[in-house]
Length: 117
Length: 112
Image (cartoon, rainbow over all chains, first blue to last red; front, side, top):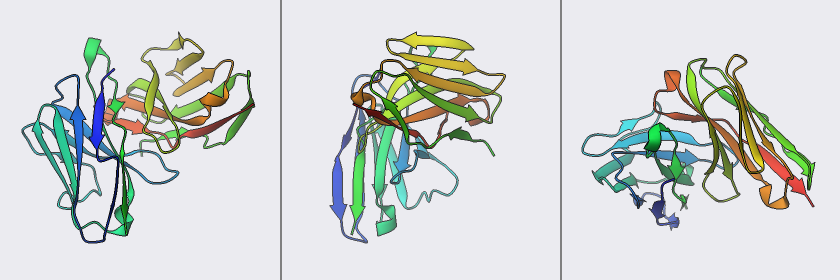
């Protein structure tokens, strides 16, 4: 597998503020990382694919100007929720795909729970 | 529309019984199939992956894939209360490309 960390694990902020979430691949260099969002009692929805050294690829319906993604190195991707509002409250999870041994598997970080008041 | 479907449950089984979780997918070109376990408030954890038709066993878990029927299942033998979680089916390949598409999950409750 792959070991992925996220920071912070939990954040509470006021409406209108920006929140940065970090995702780190601890045991291999990830040229691609994935960001998901999960609302209560719903499944994971892919928000965007983060690409090291180039622009992220956003899924349909995800505002790229609101959810800023920066993949500055092979071990770090950040997601910034700009001008957060209560409807942005969710569980944000990143993942990596080591593609080792020819197998295509995704491994998730522990997630960041965002609450916007 | 490409979809991955699961019965949302909850599925309740007594301790020691076999739990059977099912998943269907719509993209016939899908190539890789995964089962993730997600405890409440936690992120998903990969428990099984399967790439070819038939059965794949790992400990108490058996994944079954039938591409002709576009169906993948997960059997959990000797179910334990610690298996109580939501199980997510995920599909990759075909029109999804490198992306994973997740089903809504089935909530399993193993009763002591």
